[in-house]
Image 1 (cartoon, one colour):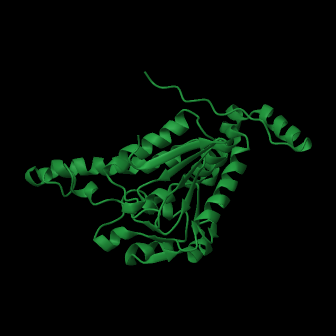
Image 2 (image 1 turned 90 degrees about the vertical axis):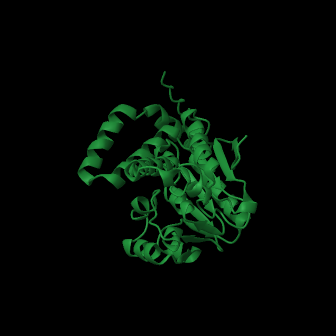
Length: 281
């Protein structure tokens, strides 16, 4: 049983919900192990066509729990104080890479991931939501790059992704000052797709979008996500070449024929799910 999440799957939608509301859904050590396992299980076993990540309580998440820094061999842990500095720092680099991989799974998932944010989205939660395909929030939501307020540089994914989501001037202002970015401004500059009055309206709206995505050809949605991510990271010429190669291998007239038939017959399309990924031996 998960310490940090409730997971429900229905109607091709996987709903991953943070459940530690009393602790403001901080990202305790267990979070960094459970989250990638949950996402990979849904994706690799083709359990859903879209993932919705939401939370409970007043705040979406207060970010990384201090226990991540101070436990065991962490940067502030007791064991690290009595070891050779170079080797300790080499391990720290690998630990940062491990933490980054926790949210890389969202980018690498074959299916879209939607974030539904209420209240505070702080520190590591900005890293998480930046890795999602779309973000939605309540009127009282705010986003803050908290790391600068505690004397460190954000390192788990905020900057590499946020610079592709909002104007760089805004990234720099938020990063250098630690100010809060409130919901209306977040929508104005393109960080969130829509702002809802309250949590109930937020979840209703996000689930409607999730259902619409789930009704489309999973293979076509997968291809779209791959192409968007590739275009983000490559030149136009390279992206055009890659989509040509993708279509040569992945394009399936069967799904197109079904899409046209469903539209003509005024019904939902009936598409095959993606196949589970074969586990390596």
